[in-house]
Image 1 (cartoon, helix red, strand yellow):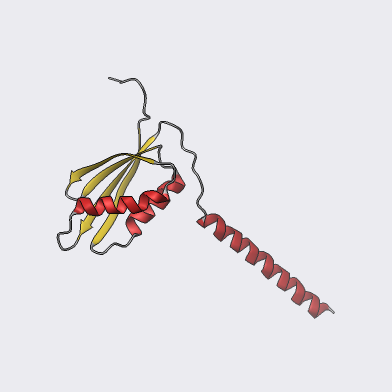
Image 2 (cartoon, helix red, strand yellow):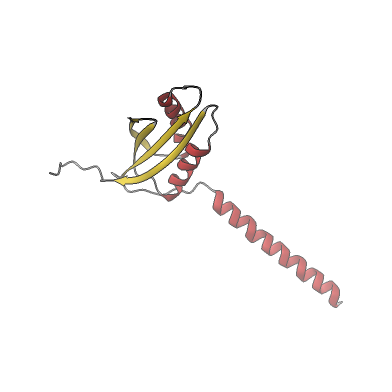
Length: 134
């Protein structure tokens, strides 16, 4: 009968759309590699604020220790305190789009009592080379 056929067709359409939605959600949340070029580097500028005079450098190091795990294959080159709660973190190879989103999200969203992280910049640095320019 025609009403039954409409119900079946509608049901199949809902299943198809549901499958598309599930695939889209899975694609949006998976951990995709970026395949950065060898020798590239990124600098992450992190501002850390704390309550109750908690040590900002210890807080920043703690945030990095937890969040570095979100970016596989990236090595820490330097972790420099710039003063007033600002830190420059240099990593190699450079962060791709997906890795940057994961790292920034972790540094800004990870909840630690009395600690708040804010990434103010992520920028690519000159590639590492064997020759000095001047």
